[in-house]
Length: 263
Image (cartoon, rainbow, N blue to C red; front, side, top):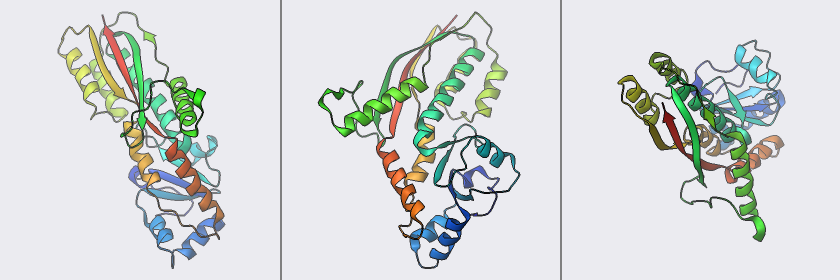
């Protein structure tokens, strides 16, 4: 792992960025000689540790600094759609869900859609084992219910979709290029829509379930799996660990039941 004033060019080496002070990074390197968790963190090939005072002039570090994300004690998660975009860990699933919705509506516009509507949003626990109520009832109190209600309300505000388009011909090449640019080539629904429109199949309505968080969870899981050192000589790392644990409890899997209508 690099702990210098720069970030690796390879996106896979910075799925997670942890911002620390130069002093904290130096202490972590000292602790790694006797602390397995510190050593594991330093050797993690998907995580980059970054000095908050990094002087590197790269466009990525400039972008992070201009976005106000280079504060000590910050954990950043890489966007699954653009490896140069990052969000603070507690906001990552919402920020990237919003990006996915914007990309999705843009793709539908390129394919000559008439109207996009959302019929239902479903949320499950992060491990996908527990289905959460469609709308949490907070009248009975309880921390879990309040967390679920807060997460649902926050996601609903982030991903509001209600769009209608004027008649237009599908632009298949632009749609395919857009899909590649945003790293969606493995999405069966997106490829299926392009195929139908390209082949002239007169589809009027396409109804399906769109996961909002499937892609972003891959990088979030990298952060959640970290075993951060508990050495009191680096108190901020303990705060980072607490932040990760709290965020994990407040992270859910969201999906939308969507109708796309065509002319």
